[in-house]
Amino acid sequence: MQRRDLQRLALAWAMSAWVGVSPAQAAGRRPSKGPSWQDNPFALGVASGQPRADSVVLWTRLLFGSADLAHQAQAQTVLCEVFADEALRQPVRQWLIETDARRGHSVHLIASGLQPASLYWYRFVCGNAVSPVGRTRTSPRVDDKVGLLRIAQASCQHFEQGHYVAHREMAQREFDFVLFLGDYIYESSNPKYRLRPHLGGEPHTLDEYRARHAQYKGDADLRACHAAHPWVMTWDDHEVVNDYANAQDNRYSDPAVFLRRRAAAYQAYFEHMPLRLGPDAEQPHQMRIHDRMAWGQLADIWTLDCRQYRSHQACPDPNRGGARVVVGCDELQDAGRSMLGAAQEAWLMPGLSASTRRWKILGQSTQMSATGVPTPMGRGTYNDAWDGYPRARERLLSGIAEANVQDVLVLGGDVHMNVAAQLRVRPNDERSPIVASEVVTTSVSSRGMGESVLAPIRENNPDIRHARADERGYTQVEVRPEGVQAIFRATPFPARDDSVLREQARFVVQAGRAGVERA
Ligand SMILES: [Fe+2]
Image 1: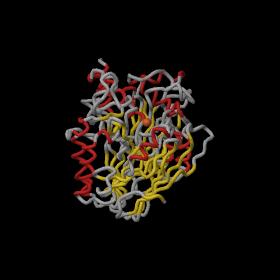
Image 2: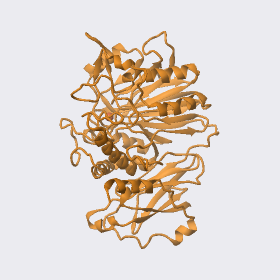
Image 3: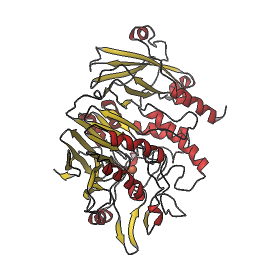
Image 4: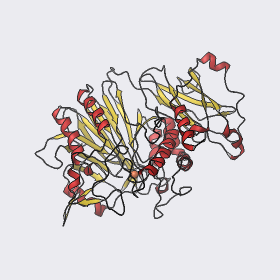
């Protein structure tokens, strides 16, 4: 059987409905005659995600130690138990799930029939092995009045460049969900900043991407943060390769070759994340990750895909593709260029215009506010963030303005700095009204730009009210009917294992009044 066919089968399996059984049935079918494991196969931990009022995705993936490799060829039956209490005395439901090598022995269970706005505890059992216990939470009913939504906003966790002290703190605090905005793994290395090395070289194949994800999940703080909260996720470039855009990588590889690599990376990503959908069964290089969820009447939250469907970066270096600062690039103004792709734009805009919830939160991978700087040749523009797609940004922001959509908050990542900024249809032009507010979170561990690069960005972009690239961490976003508060939690680079986060700055956005203000 060809690898492609195998993959297609695996994907068909991933899409197939899960077998749900009643607690009584499951009690009789508890997989006690499963394998007798030498090493606990739940070493990657457990996770939950994409919460809804009546369901949540529960995830694990079996890992086979050297003494258990004989089990790897076989399908395995995993029992998932959900409880209403931390002591696991009040069982709610159980499910039996079969998984096998075609999906990397990953388990994605849509745990349904749950109560809204409720905490649940869950674990998995396979043979003599029991997983760690995870805790998750369902969202409120879509029409519930909700007074508070607590989001932990995070992105960019280069394993080599720092420890996950941000996840350690997130795991210990109360949040409704973690909003992870991309660069979950990194494919590449920089020997100058290496606290702890990646295993193996740059991944290209499914097995190599699986190994990279498994190494990241080997971090106890990251596992603890997954076990503590449901995650709502989108991706950026490094889940596949630096600066990729649609079917083009930064080496101008043959798109057919690159799309095979993208399919492997997407499959490995799905196998390691608490997601409802995996790669498309027919077109495994495609995977829908953009999504929308409601948090009662308080907020609509969109997670956007800024990589898979975007136009290529404008005016790239012909010898080395990907991101750079461009000057005098007419292509930037091409109205056909898109960050989200036509279909995602067409999906987003009507929903945004019609939303009746107080806050409209756009979780997306990168920075929307402008960062251009003057050069002797003209204004220099970083072509990989929204600045490189100015007409697409204008379409989105003028659409918000024309439909008179209030209380839009854009949450971003990717650029390894904390940013609080005003969003106008014409950036940095005081005559153009502020139509939305932006909070970009710094990286969990990845190195940021130097102050000599950042200072001119700050000076030349008055819409940016706060920008610091020297610290690592995450952002606490507290959403209330009357306003949003963003608290940047941070520690200097590199984040060492004994680093402790403190508050770097705090910004508020008042309901009915677009724009960030220092608190
Ligand atoms: Fe990053």
